[in-house]
Every structure is written in C-alpha cells, then in structure tokens.
Image (cartoon, rainbow, N blue to C red; front, top):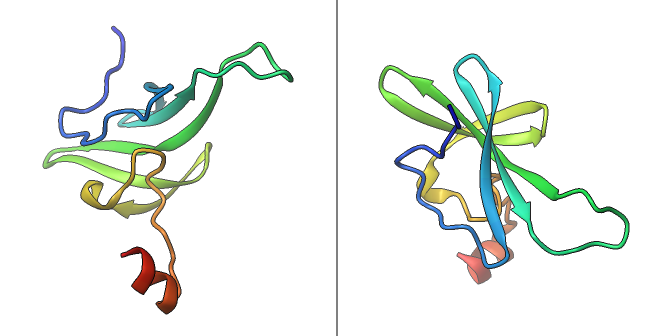
Length: 99
C-alpha cells in the first residue's frame, strides 16, 4: 500500500517539485518536497522535509519540522506554505511588509 497525502492537504507542489510521503512513526507520516532539477554533486533525487502529519481520532494534525528526524510544534495547515510547514518568524517591520 502506497502512502498518500492526506485529503485535507491544501497545497499543490510548486513547479518543478512534487510531494511524497513516508512512514515516520506508527501514527505519523513525513511529507517530503522532491526537487526534480539535476544537480552536479549528486545523481540521487534531492528532497527536503516539508513537515509531518499525525493521525488522530479527530482528524489530521500537522507539525513543522525541526529536522527531518524530529517533529516541531503543531501548525495550522492554512498558515503553511507549499515549500514548508515552518512558520515565518517576522520582526515587526517584516510583519508589516510581508503579511
């Protein structure tokens, strides 16, 4: 059985990228962002961790990554971006410019 993105996952992969899912723990999956460009330093596919999703009785809960092997804080899927579940930490000026 191939793992798939949850039904409530909001994002479409950016151009040149795709998402993949792998088992992380019993009730947790890692969501990966796969880059399809060719790189000089490797022939292996290049990917980065997007975030984590945990199954609960009430539905799915999304978490930002600390690293690809450790889960961070719970995040609202509506406030995540296609490239990462990590939440921007803007100073007041950046918040005024980018929000």
